[in-house]
Image (cartoon, rainbow, N blue to C red; front, side, top):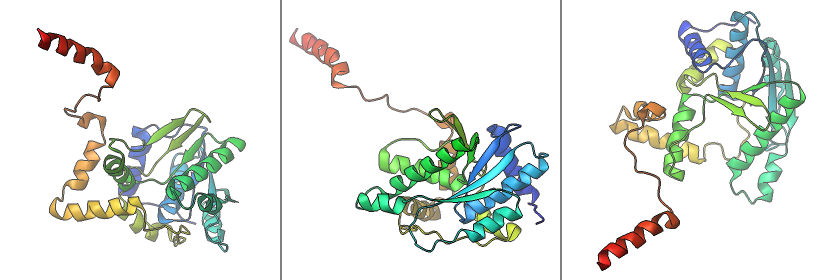
Amino acid sequence: MKINLPQLYFSKLMRAIVEFEMIEHGDHILIGISGGKDSLFLAYAMAILRQRLKNSFQLSALNINPMFQPDFNAAPIAEFCASLEIPFTSHEVDIAGAIRNQDGKKACFTCSYFRRGAINRYAKEHGMNKIAYAHHHDDAVETFFMSLLYSGQLTTFLPVTYLDRTGLTVIRPLIYFREKEIQDAEKYHGCTPVPSPCPLDGKTIRQTTKELIAALSKDNPLLYTHLASAMRKSSLGELWPAAKTRDEMRETYHNLHAVLRH
């Protein structure tokens, strides 16, 4: 299979790799691949990167079948990875059952928790030191906005995350790609994405946030750019101090009463 990307795409990929020091010589990187457009493009981009960097690192790919559908077929993903010379494995993890046992509560959290756990275990058992996920720039901005709206925090996932408990490092090489660019990239790798088996696909808080950003952007075309800028530590301006506890305020309270009595 002949693999290639436009220079603009390769430059965005290299910017992330270099800026956040994602890859070192001798790494064995496990790609989490669902078969969706993002993870297919990630596998393709990483194969190109391996080729251009003179095979200084190894690649493998793992698909987690969450068992939402009895007839999920991983064969197209396996064939695509084979064409890229990336060893591929698919594992069944009964995430659907775990969600049913919780009556559907926090389904997305449960799915993510079990999926990450299975990938981490596989990586450790097979001597891999890094895991690559296909999160892109829109994902990061949406996570940042969601954290503000739904948890009152200014946070998002990092381009590189070291996992203390496992000694693994998570990297996100597509962090500078917009979702539309990844959609357009199908014409380069030629693999049709596998439909998501998730029963909540398109009905999540993330989808609501995505649609809210799109709606607000109609009146404020710079909204997305401003949210992206706000993710950087250098963007922090004046914020209130952290709220004090009752114990921390007690001394001030008593001192104030003492002054008022006089």
